[in-house]
Length: 223
Length: 253
Length: 67
Image 1: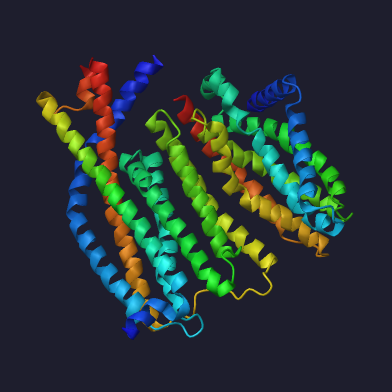
Image 2: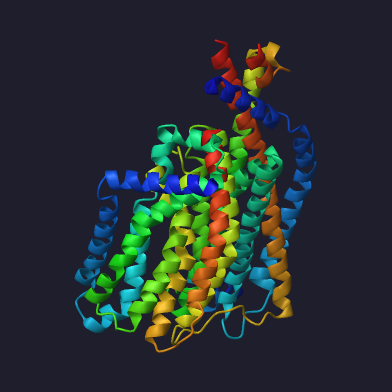
């Protein structure tokens, strides 16, 4: 029963995202365009580009995910759906996780899919792609989860759009660090690096933390 | 229905704010002692830090920067911990003084954090040769500074003061959970990219003669925080009361 | 005099040591004075309000909205 409601909520959010066609497309375009800007600023020297590729991919992915965070709860808050969801039998924590899942499917996943393209543009060595995808698969859900906390506490605030990045970006630092270091250490020829494990640990910790914190913030918002 | 309910709810919670008589009584009793202690420890601490302590054999007189930098960095963390405790007591036990303390402490903590960054930079220039090095400790403090700014921005971003208080308290708790993770990740990142020819400052092997000025300056900073916190909390409480009176007057008309 | 000069010189590091202490003094004084001034201002405002409406001397927001 709860599972059905959860699935229905995810499906609804996905339908909404698809109806405003190209929300996911915009995120990917932003990601690719921003990443393609750096060579203009840094020069096309292949060694340099290959060396900074992991960092560029992660920073631009982080910004792309950030881009779509504000609307995570905003539409539901403004049209009153959130108040209904808060009174529904499905716990608000599950509502948060459903919305985060939908957000990740429309932002994190497309960015993940486009990441190898950026790797190609930057001449990332062949052995980096597997770990790049693994790191992003573990890291981008954390970005959506942590971002959900920021989006929830800033709900109904003045200048919410500028506020959310200010709240969320400092909290993204660990994901960025471990995401980049996972790729870097593999490129330097080390196997069995702990970064991927740490990314997984962050995801495992962010899951309950984001659910509780964001649900608490949503309760305050509709109170 | 909801509008009427919220105004009544608000004025009731403000009503609780308006009568923290016990806090004010205790605070007024503590205040003169804290102020006097602050003045004395600043006087002795500064005297020891600037005159009566030796220069470090490696760093020369720049080591005196430590007597500002280290207490400021300690306070940056201590104030955030205070805010987290206040926020938790507000969110869990609905203790209104908790958020008043956290809100009053935030700008002071931000100033301490900025001071730690600025003095770290001024210390780094003669030691490292550049104003800024992405050293693990400085980087963590920089992120802490951003957390302070986020808290203050969120607190003031709502029309309804209570919403801001709740949202910012929640953010503060999320921040305090994240701080150790951030610290750990920044240390990790720093050992990964060990800067080549940078001589690390680290804490110089602390000689006994440096312990006294450092301890006294730390005490002075703590008492300074206490004095300013009491003042700002009283001011915050009065502000809430004035707002409530203003709202009541507007409603009565 | 020499002692004073060498003290002010801070072993050649005057340009770094003194700005640190000066910055700390300025910022901390600014916060200290600002906080106290705000408190005094609000206390004065509260006294004014009380003087204006003696009836409200003991009353507070709760009673006002209840009536």
